[in-house]
Amino acid sequence: MEDEKDKMNKVNEYPISYKSKDLKIYSSIEEAAEAEAKYISHQDPIDRIKETVQLILRVFPLNEKKPNTNKIYIDKE
Figure 1 (cartoon, rainbow, N blue to C red):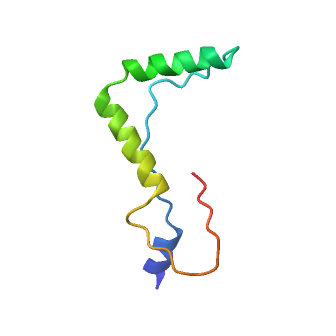
Figure 2: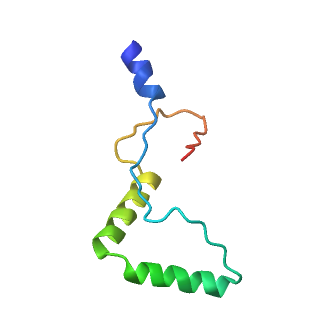
């Protein structure tokens, strides 16, 4: 019974690593979009695929079975 409670209380964290921990504030939306496009164009294609898969798994988890109830679950990730 304790193992079942531990499984229910366990938080699944997805390993996401960011290359830079700097926070940049842009003066315009166009400048931010240009910086984002430049970042994506310089990123390794394999890393982009990994990030995309991680995002898909966060939205549509494959291993998590939630009971059919009328409760609303909010994931804080």
